[in-house]
Picture 1 (cartoon, helix red, strand yellow):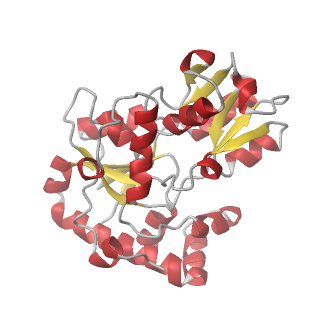
Picture 2: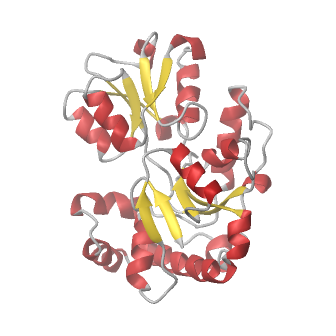
Length: 286
């Protein structure tokens, strides 16, 4: 099976280290969510690790409209609004240019919700798509915009060079969910046997991260995870692979409040998690 991600997800890295004989997932890095969508639709990849809000938008684009969230692979995705040197608050972004991955899907929706609560409407700033987190960080540091959303370690890199942390998504929205493993329903049906086996291996990896941190950490380091990223990887382990209902419904609520397409969506229309092992789909891992 083939996957796309912005950075290799620790739980998937650990699953590969724990189960070398299990169905393999060949991962490749992508630079934008649009690239992920095209690859899923064209059948070049079988799954993508991405912001779960993307499923809401992707199912409203021209195409098969059968993308679903199969599993949640991190508790949350830490996100901070990082501004160029000299900025002090979200209000300072009035008239500014904000660097994003996409205009109408993914983390930009939470960003727009934050800006709305700070008194900024859609006409008070410009959103400029530049790509994934690596591309956004580089563009901000190069002076290509006034602010962007960044998470570890990129937020630290930016603030270390004089940029300012203006707001935190999780500080305002405690239920904000982490990335999901998403697939097309047609692909799920075609790959049912290896997919069920792979989800079982993911469940085992998530349980180890919750119950055997030291061993999980050793395996992750052995698989190439930077030591500086280890604590964060373990802290953000999924509480369950089953997509969190409160988190998914928060994404829908944000769209509804912003009058964006998808505000009438439902958890049941977005999630297809029935193939997860019962241990991870019915109770938390800790």
